[in-house]
Length: 415
Image (cartoon, rainbow, N blue to C red; front, side):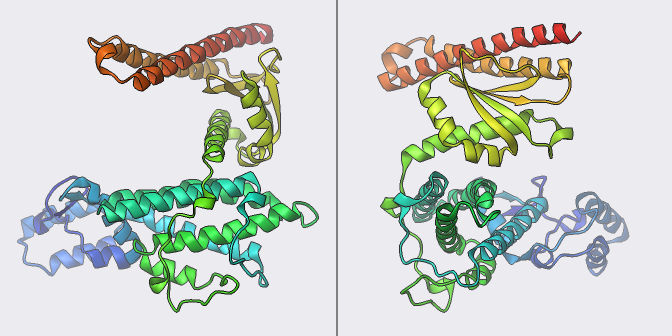
């Protein structure tokens, strides 16, 4: 049963009836009122219904298209047999369709008119960012296929969406853009990025097709055909994606988790008023393997976090004054050089929230490991994992407390 966003059954007298054609094609508030007036409601019920429409659809319903509505309904199937349909969620998927168009537009401009995709890609010779996106695509394919086979359609739609939005568009496409800025540099990287981008779009569109048939058909037809293969007349009859074992790379996926976390932390500590200014950043590493990882992905971090530079520091090095700070994990902290004086209250509040968050995790874990019967009932690997998490919390708390001391010292010197 499809209900409204508030969980109410749809009723003409409430004015909350959503016609799927009106979501697909769009309709103004006046159009919604007119539909009510053409019904058989008495004047009092008509006024109540119109007020309900004004409240829920004050600007009418935007044109969303069939694909966005279809994808939204599929994603809602996790709610058992009742769906509380929020039209704004459908609008969000329509905007995501625009992202798909932009990804294809970017790809076509970078692939060029004469690009001919290879029959098979040489993954071993690709940059790490290309290896990562193909490995993450493999994981998305595996999750989508297994979810479809188990009739878990919401899980399948989530896997497809997360890969397209969070990994391909937000990370990979942004990370490879510098390869195309200067034709005199990055020749091998640019070639590999083209191949990886084409594979991602071809496979990704075929993966998405059952959920969004119209936009994927239109975009897939624009892609060049791989060498030595015969183009199918429609994406509908092309082969559905399957896992390619040669693409799987767990180590690079693990490394990129750290890289993406570091980028998110750097973005979060950048002031809103300073979003377009490139700043120097510092990575304070508490272990050699982390330092090696950050150095290996320096180019990607600088690109994705819009930095002017990134310097790797060890625990023995001093961090320059006037830096905003955040913890990635117990072995890595990120610092961003700010212009002018630090805002003392903002930084204190930030550190206080960080500390509270870690203390809450620590308290929850402590409650688990000290529960009656925990040592006898919990498997050893679970106990080991929880102890590891507890140690990580203690290390993070130590780092935050050290930063609190440094902040107060810096503020005292500025005053």
